Image 1 (tube, rainbow, N blue to C red):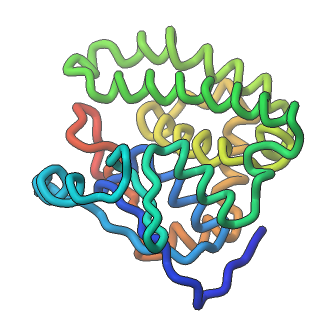
Image 2: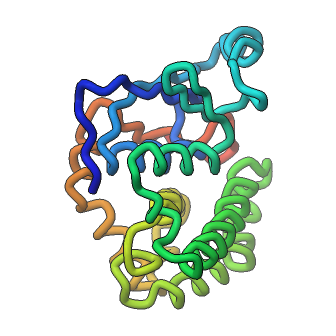
Length: 224
C-alpha cells in the first residue's frame, strides 16, 4: 500500500453528507493514505446548486468532485482514476492490458447491481416489490459475481478499485435484506475480510466514517 507524506497538501472531496456513490472513494482514499478533507453538503441544497456548482472550475461540474490545488476532477470514474494516478497505483485499474479489460467488465457488472439496488431504494412501492426485485435483478448478479470471485481474496486476485465499490454494495444489501448473502458463502467471507483490513478498522472507528444514511431522500434509507 502506498503511503503519502502527511505534509502533502490535502485533497478536497466534495459530496453530500451521505454514503452514496462516494463511500467507495472514501475507502480508496483511506487505503492509499492520501491526505484529504471533505466538504459535505447538507440539506441546504442551494449551497451546492446555486453557489459551488456554478463556480466550480471544471468543465462538467458535478458531485462528487476532487479538488487538488487548482485542479478539479468530477465524475466518479474520473475521480477513481485521478486518485489512483496520484498515488502511483495504476495497478488498481489492472496490472496488465488483459486485466484492465476484465476489471472494466467487472466494474460495469457491479454498476448494474448498484443501479438495481438504487432504483429499488427510491421506489415508492419498495416494501411491496423488494423481494421480487431482489430475486429477479440482484440475486442473479450476486450469483455471477460469486462464481467469478471463487476463493480469491479480491475479485481479481489482487485489490483493484472495483473491490471498494463491490464491498460497499454488499454492505448496503446486508442491511436491506440481512439474509441475502447466505447462499453465497464466499461473498460473506469477502465482506468480512474487507472489513477487517487495518485501514478499514481505523476508518470505521474514526469520526470521519458515515454509518448512515446510505442515500439522500430515498424511500428505503434506514438511519440506524
